Image (cartoon, rainbow, N blue to C red; front, side, top):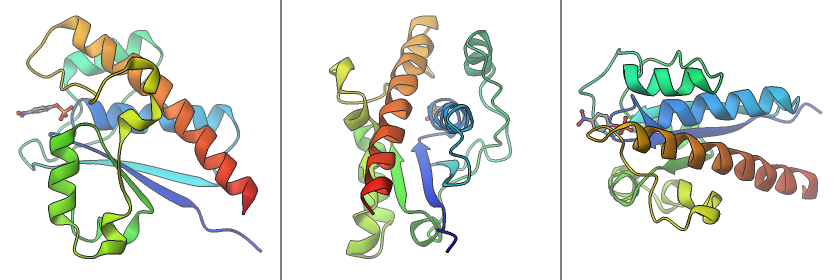
Length: 163
Ligand code: 4NP
């Protein structure tokens, strides 16, 4: 029987820097590992201020040097996302708090995680918001998300094989 896909939503504040990059890296890794049939990935923002916009130009430039093309258009998180997705992953503590207050049931709240649990190597409590900073912030975000997405896939694959 065809298994349904595990649906993952990455969330940050504006959905123009961190979460659209996470979505892009995740899709890239899934494709490289031949796992696209098992997972679907999207991203969204807590705020709707940038709705319809492409990712921040600086984020796209830094990402393109690593071979990533971010095509996502910003959109805000919707209540229906909590039913549609299996896993909802925020980038920082405020994202997680905001997601928790949007969730309407315990089951929905249980889907919320923070990205840093998948990149403990960095010893950081958040994937830091690069928006008001310089180049180093964008590079750090890419490094953390490359590692975090690889570890996330490993964890999901472990679960899938145990099922
Ligand atoms: P992101 O970065 O949450 O990683 O997309 C930000 C983008 C926009 C704003 C803040 C952070 N903003 O204040 O508009």
